[in-house]
Amino acid sequence: MSNIRQISITLSGHTRPVVHLDFSDITDSGYFLISACKDGNPMLRQGDTGDWVGTFEGHKGAVWGVALNGQATLAASGAADFSGKVWNAVTGELIHSFQHKHIVKSVSFDAGCDHLLTGSNEKLLQVFDLADPTAESEKFAGHTAGIKKAIFCRNDKCILSCADDKSLRLWDRLCGKEVQRIDFPSNPQSLELSSDRSILTVTSGHTITFLESDTLNLVKEIVTPSPLASASLHPEKHFVVCGGDDFKLYKFDFVTGNEIDSFKGHFGPVHAVKFSPDGELFASGSEDGTLRLWQTTVGKTYGLWKCTEPTEIAAVFNAANREVSAS
Image 1 (tube, rainbow, N blue to C red):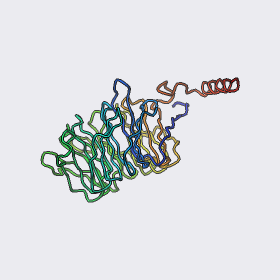
Image 2: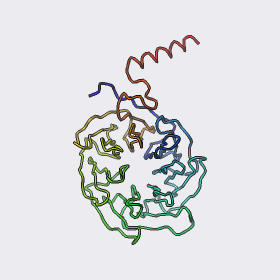
Image 3: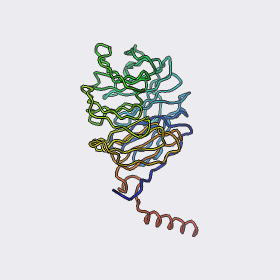
Image 4: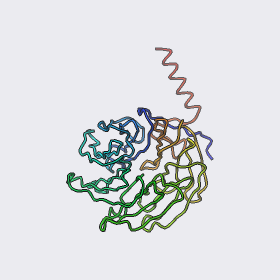
């Protein structure tokens, strides 16, 4: 076991709790990270360093859900102002705003970025056609409480959603109906499809549940020390990271289910955690208003982690002090 301590990079800029985040795929310009915050201003950053790229301005309420398309050319956000918005992620300009009748908690693009999926406290899932934004949306009703998260699956032919009615539901877009349902002992808090889209990761209570995305058959469950808000599976399925009520982040071996590590950095409950597309780091968002970046392999030279040995850090610190005192 490495004796090098995990040193996270803190990303400030938000003024309220950070409640959701999403990464793009790897593009020609690296990869990008978007964050949803109750301050109403979703932010875009360079993924490997956390450098601020821009802020999407226009919401008049807390932003609950965000999404980036693979190429980081489009962003989406869902908010307490009853709107789901689609943005040009290069210029920051608003492209579409879809009005809802309640708080929009979840936004998601399909693979071709032709459609936006939203889930709201209206207990309704809606799919909007981005090529024809004034057209009637596809609607899926059946949840009996506010929807927490919704994503496209099975080559965009189906939708998966979880809500505060303790259920995970699968919807067929062709017939417009619910075709499968799994009930949990407590409300599911997060949903994630693995990067190869084969495994679904769901958090509820103290438990991370892994399901086959094609069948929703149970793969395994990992029980954690804290009630969870979010979990993310490593792109190569080596690890799973999660966070929740006790301010800590936990890292488990996906194969054995054993806890590998736990670390504290946030000063409030962790609301969101997500692996980067290359699996080298994971990001977390918290009630404390910050995002943090953490290394998957502690001590590796990557991004801003150029020096991780305490002696190196001391040397850099001393050199900086000498420069300051000399100037």
